[in-house]
Image (cartoon, rainbow, N blue to C red):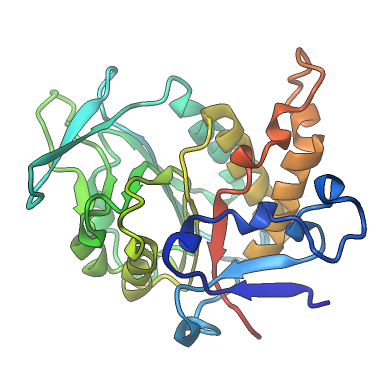
Length: 299
């Protein structure tokens, strides 16, 4: 009967989309049962010791703060790039591609956050060096709309890919591995990683270590995606999440739940004016259940 459920998954359950789990208290037939998020907020915790240690707060608009830093649509090249991961045996290369609608998420965030005068770094400006030197405590929210791979062979090879070339086309080292993340001093206490995916199911400890790295870097709360969501749906999801957080001042767990339900029931689909299809394709959990929130578990 609790309003909020704190989940401490283990092993491959780290990848389980709990948001889509049918509510066992729903008296409907199994196939008609509403998902768990219909009645509960879900908060993930990588370990029991972390419960209560991450924050739920992002300041609402009009409170005098709320600076936002965005890294999105980094320079990967029109046809994408290849990331070579040092230390992997055998040597591992991972393709990273620029989405054909990569700028959509940026445009939506820019419009939504314009009253906060956000710092938005894209293309050749969205470099690893800019993130490393962004400082600590200068922003309230950090959005990373970049390629992110979790569990590549071993947990320490999880990585982010920022700009991989400069304005002249010269290659840049834009890859931040998990040890680099541990060494970061985050410029904001809350972050949203919208482009993550779990790469290797044989690395079950990858997600707890990945979250631990960001926690060590200063994150008090975070949302990430467990798999790569279709681009247009992801852009809509991100926009509506920030709309609820920034405009309405909702805590992240509540905002996440409301957006997931809106994706499922079709209300966001209708607002997107995508009515060429009668049926809401975003009803499927693929489009919304992969976004998970790590934050305050108990208040």
